[in-house]
Length: 129
Ligand SMILES: *[C@@H]1O[C@H](CO)[C@@H](O)[C@H](O)[C@H]1NC(C)=O
Ligand SMILES: *[C@@H]1O[C@H](CO)[C@@H](O)[C@H](O)[C@H]1NC(C)=O
Ligand SMILES: *[C@@H]1O[C@H](CO)[C@@H](O)[C@H](O)[C@H]1NC(C)=O
Image (cartoon, rainbow, N blue to C red; front, side, top):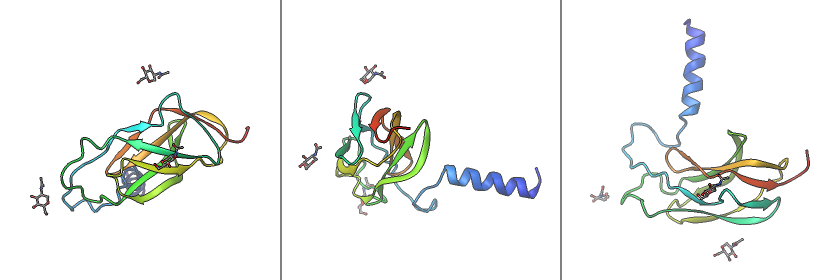
């Protein structure tokens, strides 16, 4: 591959592995499983819901502990929509406001502590297509 292709691939792969923490920094990986929403959850636009996750497996020292982020995924693709950011990953629950989106049943949340963890697919009643 030529230099341009190489550069492009490098940008692509670095964005896939994007992490808020410097790679040289030693840290404990903590990607807690999301326990709510579940695969039977239905949210309506504008509502506030408490996303919850299991903190029982948390290591003693978590680097970037206050860098929790919840982002929306739709149809298997991560969207740029951030529902919550810069919260303590040891809280175990955090309120989010359901965004105004086109209605669908293949939404997921992505929880970024270290690498991302996906929730089950759930439904958002937003705006008709
Ligand atoms: C929903 O989750 C439950 C519990 O994990 C599981 O038993 C069930 O098969 C799931 N249903 C679907 C449609 O994925
Ligand atoms: C979310 O949690 C807060 C604080 O515990 C509680 O007051 C509120 O009723 C919860 N909201 C929902 C939708 O469960
Ligand atoms: C956690 O951090 C403290 C203070 O930096 C350190 O003394 C301790 O050994 C660490 N524990 C683990 C399990 O890494």
